[in-house]
Image (cartoon, rainbow, N blue to C red; front, side):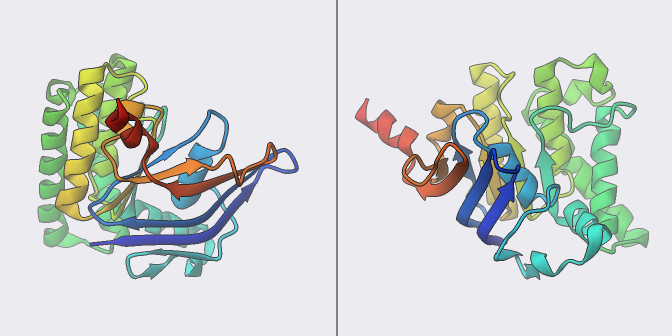
Amino acid sequence: MSVLHAAGLTYCYGPELTVALPELTLEGGVPAVLTGVSGSGKSTILECLGLIKECTCQCFTLGKQDVLSLQGERARALFRQGHIGFMPQTGGLTAFLSVRDNIKTQAQLALRARGLSGDSAKQELRGLISKAEECADALGISDLLTAYPHQLSVGQRQRASFCRAVSGQPELLLIDEPTAALDPNKAEALFALIEQWCAQLGCCALVVTHDERNAARFACHYRRSEELSTPERSVFAAVKNPFKEEGERK
């Protein structure tokens, strides 16, 4: 199972705001949630971990890879394609590809980035696509695999984006507000699938959410710390799951 460890992660937007994550440890198979008020930097944390934004970091490892040793954008991009699945809050799908082709393309990129080619890659690709289509079926969008993003509702696009994010079977899954446009039943189904996927693959996962009810199901929780933060500096730290405790009190 993969393990992610990061320490001293800092991203500056200038004098207005600094986002900081002093320490983060994610265990494979155990998804974690990241919460905080809007505008506090949650999506920024995901983009830094996903190698989309460049940040200052003292330590960053994923599995056996020292991520800080990756030199240049090409090396970072290849590692991102091969090992990280990202579901942004909006978008996440290529507009001119069907849902099925979005899934296939992401899986192909992941295999290519891992150096697989030839017959072994073709066989692996078939397995990845089949698994992602199982995911689509579990989320109730298997009948939309031939549709294009503009033909989908916002909620359908979110679910399709998740299927694309997991299609390459990444070591790290980063998910930004996955249930913002979903009704409670579909939201619960997606969170259950996140747990199931992580457990089966042993991958690490960090989910940004305002969905307190579903956040309560995860034991591993990072939250903007009111004690450590200031208006100019937003600091995230590990806490006992506050939503779980509130639910138990009720």
